[in-house]
Length: 103
Image (cartoon, rainbow, N blue to C red; front, top):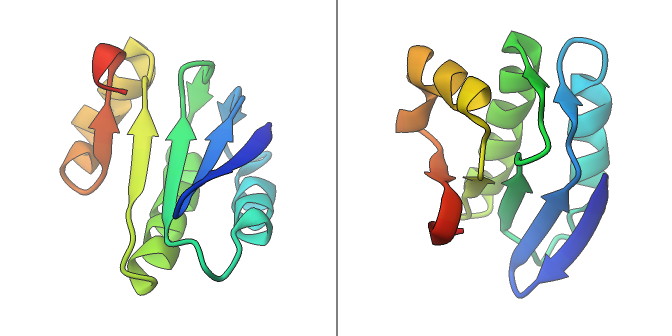
C-alpha cells in the first residue's frame, strides 16, 4: 500500500484486501499518513479482491475522520464484486464512488 499527497487529499493505492485480518491496521496506517492540514481521502480500490464488513467499518471510520475536517472519502474504481457489496449494503449512498474514466 502506498500513500501520495495531492493538494488537500491523501491518496491511498494498492489495497488488495480489506477485512477482519487487516482493517484495524489499515485504518491506523491511513490516519497516521494523514497530516492535520489534509481533509480528503481518496482510496483506489482497483486492486481490491476482498472486502468484508470489518473493511466497510474501517472505511466508515475514515469517512468520519474526513468529515470532522470538513472533507470526504472518495472510493475509486471498485471491481464489480466490491461494488456489489457497496450496493447491497447501501454504502454507495454515503461514499462518493468513482469508476472508470471518471476517476
